[in-house]
Image (cartoon, rainbow, N blue to C red):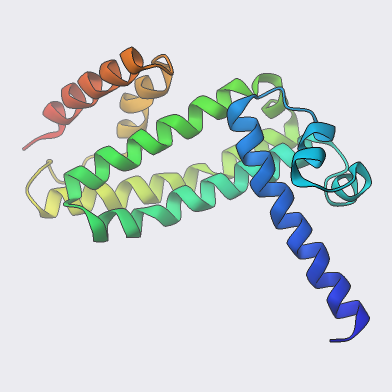
Amino acid sequence: MPEAARQRSDALKNRELILRVAHDALQESPDASLNSIAKRAGIGPGTLYRHFPTREALLLEVHQQGIDRLTDAVTDALAAHPPLEAFRAWFTTLAGYVRIKHGLGEALHSAAAQDVVSASWPPVTAAVRRLLDACAEAGEVRPGIDPVDVIMLLSCLWRTPDSPEGAAQADRLMDLAIDGLRP
C-alpha cells in the first residue's frame, strides 16, 4: 500500500476511534474534556485536534453519527421484532439518546449546532413514519398518524429520570401514549 493511502487509512481509523470513544465518554459524562477523550482513545491530543479542532466539531459529529445509527436501526428493529415492540424499543433508544444530547446543554445551542440538530429532524421523522406504518399495517395503531405529533407526544420519555424509577415511569407513559394511538 502506498504511504499516502496508508496514512489516509490510519487517519480514518483514528477518526472512527475518536468518535466511538467520544460517544461513550459523553454518555458517561457530558462534561468529558477533549484531552480525556484523547487519553481514553490512546492517542495524543494533537491527533484529536487534527480531526476535531473544537469541542463543538466533535460533539456535532458524535450527534450526527448517533442520528445515523438511530435511523438505520429501524430496519433491524422491524426485522427482529413485531412492529409495536420495535416501536417501543426504538423510542426507548431515542429517549436515551436525547437524554444524553440534553446533557450536553449549551454545547448544542450554537448556530452551527442548530443547523445539524435541525437536519436530524427529517431522518428521525422518516424513521418514526416507517414504525407507524408497520404498526398500522399490523393493526396495532390507527393509520395516518403524524410522526411529528408522535415525537412530540413521546418527548416525555426523555424527560424521565435516568434511573430504574424513571425507566418504570417511561414504560407507563409509553403505555398511555400507545393506548391513544390504537385503532
